[in-house]
Every structure is written in C-alpha cells, then in structure tokens.
Length: 125
Image (cartoon, rainbow, N blue to C red; front, side, top):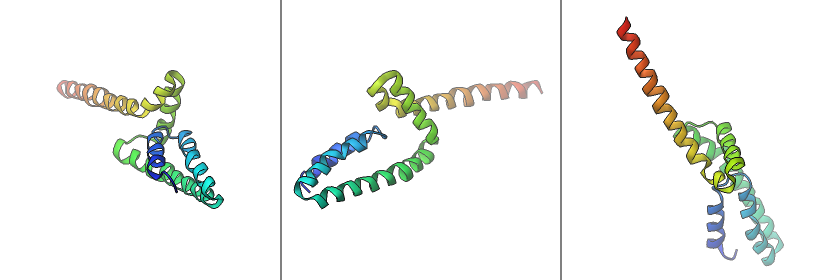
C-alpha cells in the first residue's frame, strides 16, 4: 500500500467526528489500493469496516463508560445537538463540552447543593 503514513494520519485526524467522516477517510486509501490492484482496494475496504466496527461498537463505549461515565445515547444526542446548532465546529466540540457540563453538574448540583441541604437538615434534627 502506498502512502501509509499519510492515509493513517488522515484517518486519525478525521475520527474525531465519529459517524460520517471515517467512511470518507477510507475513500483515498481504497482508491490508492484500486490503482495498485483490485484485490488491494477490496482488502482496504474490509479492513476499514472491521476496524471501524470494533472501534465504534466495542472500544469507544467501553472507554466512555469507564473513564467518563457517559451513556452512548448522551454521546450521540450531544453530537447531533451541537452539530445542529453550531455546525462542524460544534460536532468537534460536542463530546468535550458535554463532559465539562457533566462535571459541572456533578460538582455544583450533587456535591455542593445536596451536601448543603444535608448539613442543614442534620442541624434541624
């Protein structure tokens, strides 16, 4: 396969937008593989599909669940909402902004407000 570093860099940079862009990032390597020989283009397509399926359906949900504690539905909903309101930049920033909002809500609502309410309730007893 020709230009492996350029193709890997393109695929890596474009995976930040999880739904459509991995498909688009597979087009240049498939075309390069087809130019070399038809079976290489087909092999690149199959490998891209396998890698994308494993990454999207197994690795990403596990990482999001363990490290961020964010449900996959919230991930997709935030991406759709941010893309609708802010376009391409919103799609890039959807997950980081959602994680920041989640941490703020946990810190302000759960820890601060509920702890203050509990201490006031304990004083009244």
